[in-house]
Image (tube, rainbow, N blue to C red; front, side, top):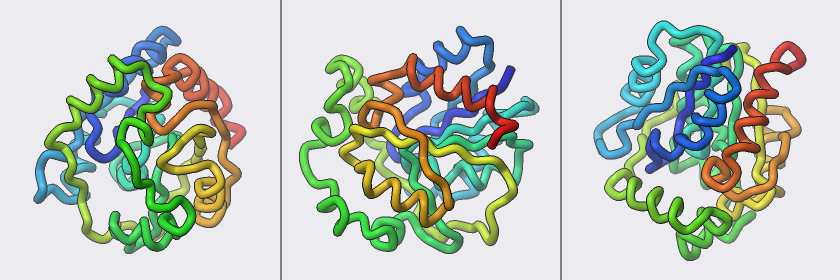
Length: 220
């Protein structure tokens, strides 16, 4: 069985992964999730990576799952841990030397999507049960910081990658995401129903996909 290292997006928390973690454990896997230092304005990429590495410890058979802005963290972790597979779930895909803020401009996000303006609940939680959405938003209070230093990757390591696109994502719409994934990873993404917070709206289906990725890892 695998160890799934679950990395939340900007402002998120480890608790957001709880439903998916339960489903993965039912399938016999180990699960690690951690709170990234999004509440620390001075934290840089190295601090974020240290947090993930410390949480993973000496575990092996690692599948690193990165949601949204967590896509900046997952490839960096591969330089420190023996990662067998990276899975982006509606994840941001950076290029070497790019900053978090530059990503939005460089990918043409505003032109392609209108900038993602609108009510937070409507954009991120439109298909999430209200009680889960409210709890997730409460956990995110005060955790709005994310590093804006250059992404310190010179070359991507040779680690297999899967990308899972959310068909109902209002933050990263499918057409936009397909293009970015094609241009930056040279991949055709897999797709799942659900919005940006699919880990809350469809935890069982997401866990099933993640489980299958481990079983299919030799085919990547």
